[in-house]
Image (cartoon, rainbow, N blue to C red; front, side, top):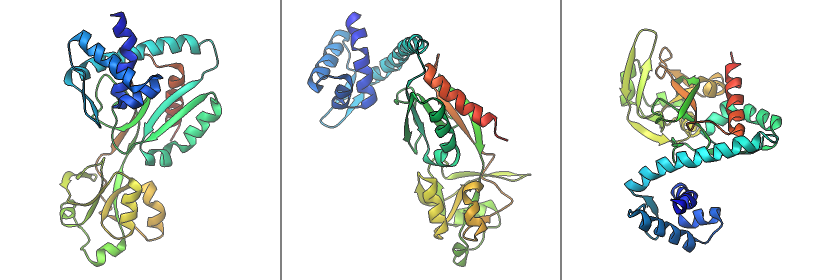
Length: 295
């Protein structure tokens, strides 16, 4: 058991990095030493924890089940250590944050600058990811995710609801008819933001319908969706705040203006279970306070 506890951080590092060489660099040892330690651990336990080839390292089903428990144990140990140390000094350390790029550009820029000014000893490591992440295995303290499919036991805090609308360039309708009903979208070129998917729940004050669109283009970036809509390549779901300057200038028009892109997409601030380290708690409280103060 003592050997297992000693090797536990190494096991988690390999699982997170999906690479013995990267995990070895983080752990301050050679890749061969790390590989030997893991193989010895597997031998002692009598199970295979990782599939290995020349390029990839992947957890076995047994390894995945073990890692899920080990992540919790290691996390709780880190939190216990942090709670003692940070209470004895000014808040400091690293907070690893993951969000969509447009979330930063349209909502978070000022909040993060204010946080950095208020807590200069807390470092932020910000990663932009256009796909959903899983804090049970991905190396982040905080993630901003669009719900509702967020796996337990993660802790979710709703921040806002994004309500997109349909926009297109007037140039598009020189070659295609203007839609009259949401069902007409199926016959028109559509530009799909990957995380919204190609099933668009359209809503007005009286009706809600689900439209299966045929994506002509699919992007993970909302800015690319806007750019292709501006160029006349199709209809895109965009937030009115993002489209407003181009709509005012006549470069974009609202399509089916009485309809919105569903009842909205909820955005959540997500953290792992249990007590948060002080530096992470300060970050979470700062973000929540900023959203709570918005009209």
